[in-house]
Length: 240
Image 1 (cartoon, one colour):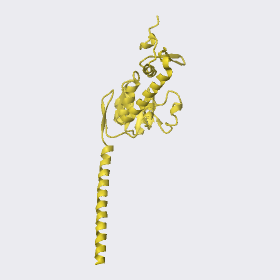
Image 2 (cartoon, helix red, strand yellow; image 1 turned 120 degrees about the vertical axis):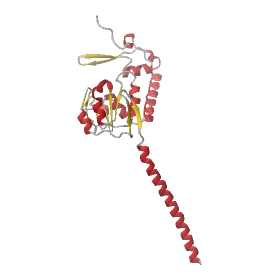
Image 3 (cartoon, rainbow, N blue to C red; image 1 turned 45 degrees about the vertical axis):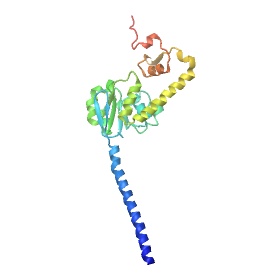
Image 4 (cartoon, one colour; image 1 turned 90 degrees about the horizontal axis):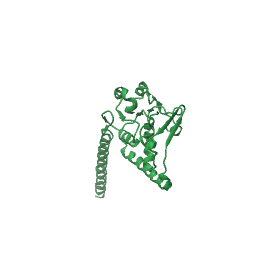
């Protein structure tokens, strides 16, 4: 009789363990079945050329502007290919370490389409102002998203890139940190924030004055610094 009780006890324990294992197995199978659906969920990106659908979050991104390269890095995305930096060999010094394994695909004004195709990207990000003429070629290689231009509020382009790589929340975090830095700077400047500022760039054979519709202009305006009347205009007066 004792043996029977022991057997019954063992059978009961075995049955409980078996049912638990089956339940766990079903849960794991369910989770495994659901994961790909989450990863493969498609999304749409409205941009300068049209609305583009991406079937999943891109893993191999090619970026065709310098400002776009730095935006992706700020979002935690290292591209597989990028246009060469305006200075550096081939990247700006401050991004060289992050870009050491990235392939050069030409320069902003002359993109190497063949080099892009060889990388087999699943997203290409470019700019209508720079690469409108080759949009159809790029689109044939991979889903392509174009920003409208390189002027005006740079935050618009940044938000577009964040949307394109499916990192909208990360993009909001980056912009929030930037806004906080601006507020901290305004506090440190105190009354000096009211000074008039001109942003000038001296280059070999050329001098550029940056107005309010430029990267630096947008930052200075957010800080609250005043601009001389001639710098508020988008174009300088013609020489007599």
